Image (cartoon, one colour):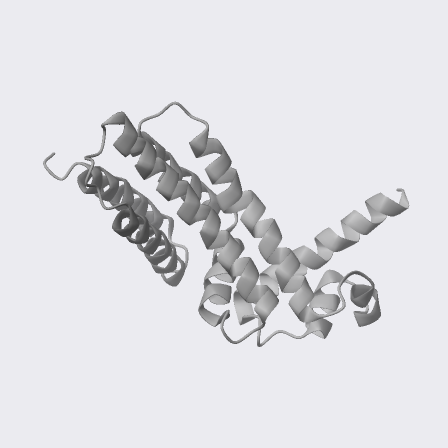
Length: 203
C-alpha cells in the first residue's frame, strides 16, 4: 500500500470512529483521545491528520454533505421530472440516505442544534448543508411556477421552509424511535403524501 493509500485508509478509520462516537455521545462529550482509541491510533497519530477535535467534525460534516444532500441535489435537479416528482425523489433519496447512514443523521441533527455553541467552522459547515437543500428546493419550486405546474402566486419561501422543517422533523422522529424501520416507512409515506397535498391542495 502506497503512502497516499495508507493516509486515506487512516483518515477513513478516524472518520468512522468519530462518526460512531459523535452519534452515540455527542461532539461535546467525546474527546479526541476517545476518537483515537476507537480508530486504533494514538492521539499523536490523529493529530497528524487533524489538529483539533473541531477539525475532525468539520471534515466529517463535509463528507456527510457530499454523500447526503449534495448527491440528492445533483440527482434531483438534472431530471426532466415535474416539481412534484422531484420533491418525491428528494424525499426518497433522503430516506435512503438515512437508512444507509443512520449515524450521519444523528451527527447532522446534533451539530445543527449545537452549532451556535461549538465553533464558527462547524456552524459554517452546517449552514452549507442547509444552503444546498434550500437552493435545491427553491429551484424546484421556481421551475414548477415557470412550467405552469404551480400557480404564479405560489409562496416559494414558505414552501421551502415547510419542506425543510418536514425533512428535519421526520428525520428527528425516526432517530428518536430508535431508528425503527416501521416508523421510517410511515414517515416517508407521510412526507410524500404531504408533498402531493402541499403542491396540489385541491387534489
